[in-house]
Amino acid sequence: MSSPAALPPSTPASPAAATPGGWWAVCLCAAWCGTCGIYRPLFDELARAHPDVRFEWVDIEDESDLAGDLDVETFPTLLIADGQRALFLGPLLPQAPVLARLLASLQAAAPGGAGAGGEAQGVFERVRAARSR
Image (cartoon, rainbow, N blue to C red; front, top):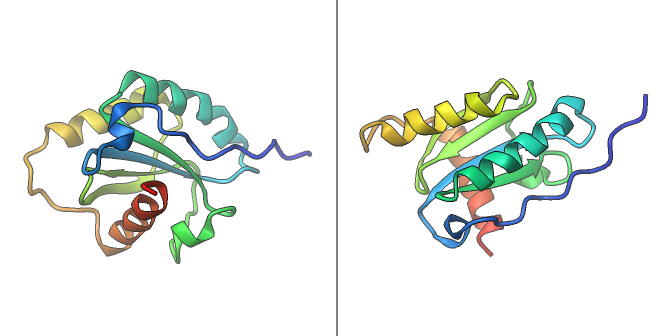
């Protein structure tokens, strides 16, 4: 079976993309993953529908330094952050409404809630540093 073409990293598509401290939705995927290839257009559609959130696509094999020691077992794996803290890191059904609901629930939660942990925070900080240049 042939593998799909490599997917390019995401491009900032909204004003939130240039605003430090705004919400981030980071999809951790791999170019060879067929599910990721199907999910990419939905992820990009969500980016257009949520201009207040910065959407980033990270191929964990091409950009392994961003993933660090994180062991991604299921694709797609999503990282959601409020701009300062990683609030969610885990596999997510590759359906746009699932991610939209997760974003809405995290954004509506009281500020100062629990973060997703040190490993998630490390991944977010590396992605933010690399993509904010």
